[in-house]
Length: 454
Image (cartoon, rainbow, N blue to C red; front, side):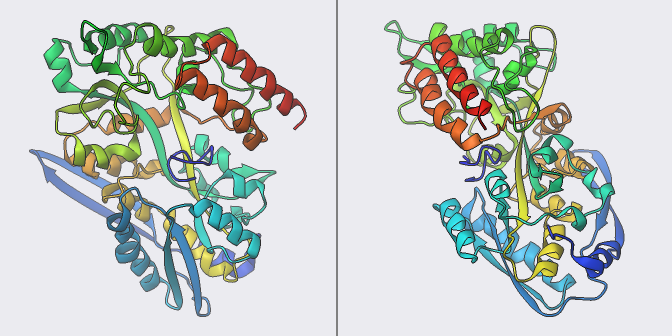
């Protein structure tokens, strides 16, 4: 998962391209494609408006470097190298794209390359590089109409001081996954969109199996303690003051703390969630696939992995409603930007538009990558044509949650906030060495001191 606060999954424009750049954006033809899929005695008819990235007057010969990552290694990279990049090059004669996979400590290496002026032209990026002024403003690269096609909760993470620096690569939201075999074994009804925290808690208890000595072999839920804000929001609480670049942490306030206590009790009081030593080296990201968890907070980028690895019957549903009937989604922001040191601004802008186009998102959401589209106009392709949809899974739940989602909290001076927050948070949730209320109070005290002086 990400070291960037706003790019949770990945490890992690033009200033004005002038009249030529404006002409390039304005001369992209629209192609309307209609696809009819016959599947399981259903006919799914989808009309998608696609903007092809075709330069009216191709730029002079240019070579650019593009960096991105994939959960699926070489097979995932082929989507870029064998499909997307060749298509872009065919549409844009004279522009060549060199793909560079983001592997290992790529974030640190790229940060160093930026300082040296040798970073890739177009790359997966996040808030830290935006704030460090290493990316070009790109608001002139895309029309207001197309901007409106992206989820606003995600776009706010890519704006700073009146400029837009990134465009979304995809959108990641969370839903509940559940193990149908474990539900059947326990004689429980499957969860639905009407489930509340109360029903969730009751089911988690019945799905937990411990021997006479208290050793667990199966758990109702696995608390993922770094993704708890949506619990606070569903309880009418707040994580911070503001929707983005918050200036005051609020997790010690009654409603937010109550939501945290609900999850803490799941793990430490009721023991319906495994402790850090109980799953014998199975990380939280792999515990559902191991078949030992009843409920699991699933992220949309995990769909392909679930399809490949789960050997049991499973399904998706919406997050449960909070005590007052409120349900709030959680959205994350991975985006593409243009390195400020690029020597090929026009070509980089053309490639950025291509990689964030509706047609490209249609490819990335229906391919092995399985990335939920950040364009609302492509949600129907995810819902009906993605690998998860074709496998009969309720991936529409992710689209539904995206409509009511809020952005993962990101504070002003986030790096310093993380230095304070992370060790205490881990002591609360991973080792259990700090009481919840005491740890939260300490976090809020020191974080808010930092933010007051930011």
